[in-house]
Length: 339
Image (cartoon, rainbow, N blue to C red; front, side, top):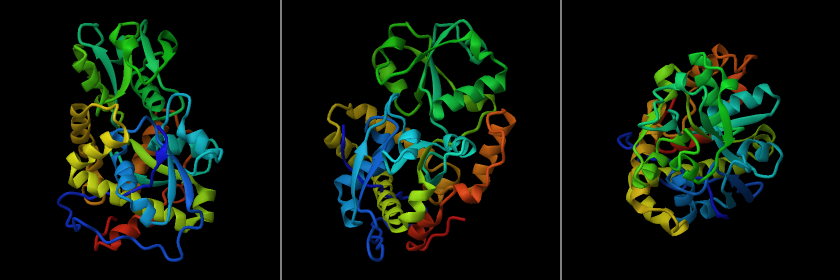
């Protein structure tokens, strides 16, 4: 599952951007042309922008050679990027904020999912109507990323005692859930519910936002040091990725074809389902005009929520966290203002 990739852009349907934007030119080229990117999961439509950018040559045009690494419960983007094993990564916006409080100096380059895709999947006949029914049950958990943060926020918001819940590490395969060895399975609502239903399971989804937990999702990040030392590399990476997202949103079926070329193990119908669900998240709120824009007000609300839930204990200086300029420059070249 390892391949060459580069980040590409986002076309917001109806935002007035040209269907085929001009290639962003980075003067003098990237300082570091060979870089790596760590995804949160295996290559699927969730990462369409990167895959489209790779297969359509946008990274190469930007002067970059990028290795795309899949993520897993054992290969979590934040610690890998923080340690320098990868140059860029994808994680939840909440994870970026919590990392800063822990002294991990990362910056957000783009906010792809303006609303969180995380859901907690249960069998419809399991008698689990909400988090109040989690005690005494077994739940799969993906540690060290946005899924765990949203889980903790949900428990805090509903007064549920975590010590009364049995947790086991999650995995790619949802067999433990399908075989009812696990009662609750964290998923992205954009994909795994389709898989479960295709396997004959009748499932319900418990959403944290129904309990007052409003969070963002996938965010492109790097370390502050890398951004400072390699500004042209960051500019090229962001611009190429935005181009990829633009194409994927404008023509999701073409993106499905490209993803199947890149990862033939996937199912077309599932990718079509995932594309439709993902585009809604990409174009929610600030993403309606500029996909990927990290709106300071929305991030401030996210920080406030985490503080209220006692997950974030120190104020975060958002100007130090949000590195919007590469994205703003990309849209400005198209005549668009995002702020």
